[in-house]
Amino acid sequence: MGGLPTPDDRDPAPGASPATWRVGIGSLLFATFVFRLSQTRADPDLWGHLRFGDDLLRTGRPVRADTYSYLTGDRPWVNHEWLAEGIMALVYRAGGAPALVGLKVLLGTALIAVLTLHLTRRGLSGLGAALLVAYAMLLVLPGFESLRPQLWTYVLFALLLMLTDRAEEGATGWLWAGVPLFALWANLHGGVLAGIGVVGVWVAAHLAWCERGWRTEAWRVLPPAAGMVLASLANPYGAGLWTFLLGTAVGPRRDISEWRPVELTSVEGAIYLVALAVGIGGLAGSRRPRSPAQVAVFACAAVLPLLARRHAALFAIAGVAVAGEHVADVSVRLARRFCPRGQRPMRDRRAMIGWLLIGQAAVLLWLAAPHFRRVDVDPRVYPARAVALLRASGVEGHLAVFYDWGEYVLWHLGPRIKVSVDGRRETVYSDGIYRENLRFADGTGEWNSLLRSHDTHLVLVPRGLPVWNLMKLEPGWTLLDEDAVSALFGRRDWAPLGRIQAAKPGVSPAPETPRPFP
Image (tube, rainbow, N blue to C red; front, side, top):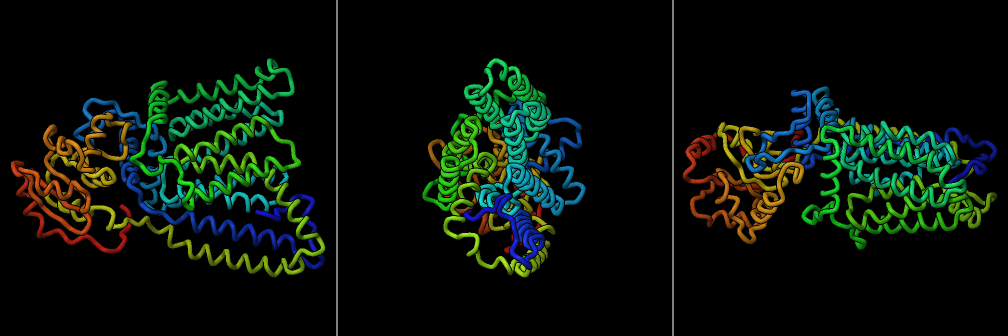
């Protein structure tokens, strides 16, 4: 990250073409981002997001009564991502999987553009801003492996930080733009809770260190801040959304990898530690004025990955927005110290290098084009053959299913086949039912209560899990089908069992190579 140009460091050597150089650097970075962002896999929740979004488009309102599981009972469904799912379903209807990839790239590009424009407005050159954003994206890109509602949070979180930055400069009127932003955010993704937290931290720190009288400043910042918080009530669940989000945010989710703290000894942990050290170093060594309120936001964001690794992206975004200009200031001074102006290499070759970079960017975009054609589904991960068998049999029933497969099954078979659990977790399942499904998959404690306490007809589990072997020993159950991925069991006294057995000869083996979504 060293050697970032600043506005006073752009004078070209004679014969050089700064425009070509800058266009080349910008083109290559843009092409690199597009290449990476367009690589898309189907994660376990993608089928559910599209199914629930399609239900929204069909009914014209968020669905509150679940029809896809036999264990949700009368529990109301708090779908905090309903608008994001509706947009995804609308895009999928319009252009299929390629359109979904396009939406994901559009959101990623919007995030990059917001951060880059912010840094250039703070005085960095386009190259310096691009390099800082490129490093931050190392922590953000894992979230872009699939199209998920949380991608909206990344963009809106960055926009919120831009508004507080403008307010720090004295233009507190910009904060009112946060009111419609929060009204939209509350219906797109539960990350609006992080936005409320940032607003609270910023307002408290801003008033504590404001140069004007704090009462006068309070009248300038508290009304729009309160408007943002109140705007988040503009959702189908009202204050119930707050209750739900607070309940899920403070509870542990150790069974989901992205909700575990970042492992400092991993590659991701190393990137986080370097980003933290660079940010702190920039804030400590910069000659530019530092806002205590923005530093407070940076400090809070730095703690988030230690609570859940999925928050690493928010820290990276906050790091660029708050510490980026200070990191650039320190980097330029170090570059001038170790590489004086007269000794900087290749300044007279920048035009030629610029054209080479433009050529490389064109090649990267050409290589990225196939990524837009489809979203791949790995048949080694999902039970394609078992689902095809159930579809061919035409049976209706209740299926105890592995957590990661719930939404895959309900997309292909629901609501005719109802599942025991899926990725919606606490939005629709009680804690007791969810724990019962975990015990079943892990084969621990009263693992078979899911079979004996509920009207379960079928079981679909991965080969290799403890429950796979336990099911072979469970009285009253029989193995219907098995391949390298999954095993399908049926209850012997369930009448439609014969229809599944009869459908087996017509079902082909699961493919071995990736297949296009869905």
